[in-house]
Amino acid sequence: MKQRQLKLWQELVKKLAAGSSAVKPQKPLAQHWLNNSIGRAGFNLNPTVNSRDERLGVEVYIHHPESKKMYQALLSKRAEIEQALGFELDWQELPDAHSCRIASWRTGSPIDDESQLDTYLDWYVDRLTKMNAVLKPIIQKL
Image (tube, rainbow, N blue to C red; front, side):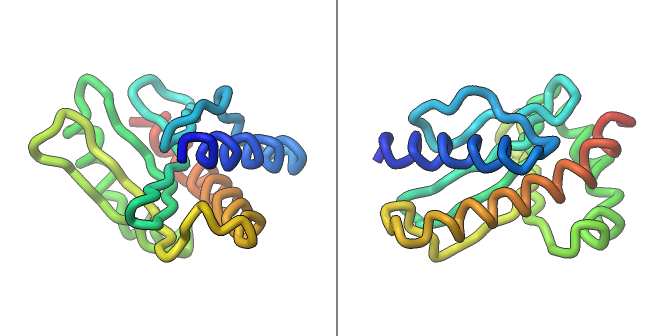
């Protein structure tokens, strides 16, 4: 499974670079997420894959010293953010954790189905590009 994850991230990095995307992930590793900065310490915009649940994701992961306060500031702009994105997000305060998550999911997406790779990559590029464009300026002003 780790090799499939690594291949997915390698292909995504290539596709983002080929499209001159503003999203520039770090070097891919064989793990279920790909690190990507969103321009402020304590925040990441990461593509993820959950092989067990056959679900792809793009998430803003908030691990800031004031994670809960930052999450609430973003949550107060939920309607504005989701309208600008054109899709709803899954807002997870994660009350038993220090971190918070705001995510978009694509269900029914097994990464071992190689025939769907281009579809998955297109979905990631679309979500990463939109979420970066909408959320980055808001996060940088927090």
